[in-house]
Image (tube, rainbow, N blue to C red; front, side, top):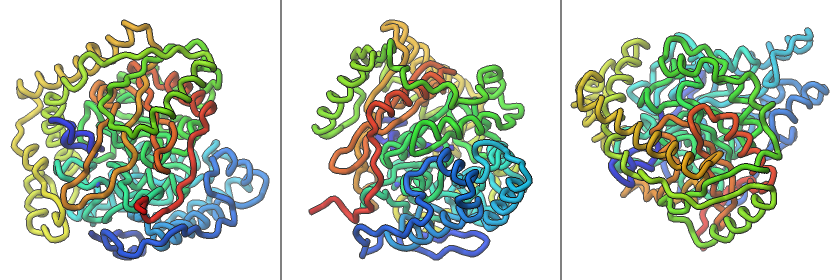
Length: 544
């Protein structure tokens, strides 16, 4: 479903995280992987004042008659043309919904008739290109699926439409959610090319939800949906100055999403503030989850309105465990940011204690084996059941070899090949690895350290500032702190912490399974205290 370059650090930390064409009702132009003349300081006109504007403000302005949903949708389409296709050429949107304006006009008519579907009525949302959303392609960035148009929406997309959201289009991603090669380039796919970070265009947007991260940071839509297996929401959110939330596995339906791992996959919100992330989660969590075992375990755990659970005073009395030695190589300037931030948090009534994860890294090898087994099982099931152009990993591998010039110009497909050699989920080796990974990350990891120190949540610097794109060597990833939550299937949240040389850095919050509302509330209080997000400046480079 999505993973990050975090897997380059060890066995699993070696895997998950970085040119072609995009298509829609009208084909989008082919863009080169690395343009030679990136413009500096380009900003388009913004007549509706969309930049950095939240969903509640836009909804209030539509209610007041300042503009319609169709006018709002057109303004976002114009902004995509100016920033994504032209200007800095972020290359974040892989495909536009050809029906977006018609859908917006229909919602305008409903508003005129006095029918409002909810807080997202008329609000534009972008969806990652591994989620079924008609009438668009669902490709996971692969040219092998460039003609694959699902027959129906994924349940989470159906829930968004039922809630009144306008599906603006699909976003680019690290191909196959970054489960193709250990030398991958985050944000690159054969179908979509390279997505760029709007803070510095020669830096990574991370992945695998790269396009969603860059697009929402640049205000190309109000809200975005990403997916994560191990950091693929949190990494692009942190490196693009966003709030990113990976829910407890099962809280949001995974049906209609091209998978990696049923143990770890989840879709989740990406937004410019915690309130919008909570508002989007309220809709995503309401989607029909079908017979998924993890979704059945979430029965009774979902909350109708996550916004109502946010409390700006939730740091008061909270006990938080800071994992200083989380393996993240941050610049010295972040130490000063942390010192100021912790002082503010303590002044707000929080207790912060330094802790260590007793099993840190010990789950990596087991996780990697689990992902190989579950990817083969899950992706082949998706390909068969959704009548995709290729039906097996063997067919996909053969397609890539036959089209190596466009599919493998920078890195290979060794992870697909390793997964293809795995047996069924009944194998003893798989069952042993799955049990070991969950135990080390969950019961002996997060649960143990939280119980020992009587914590409400764990916090850590999310990852490094965005690194340079390296098409030769792949991602020079500098560490991540969210791995335990990813492997255990527990919730995790990143909120902007500050900047290093103008590049965003995030703070991660992790907690026990089903502590989703608590993490969001703590993150909201943290956000209100720090107000750390800044808008991107679209610099060509940070180099002098």
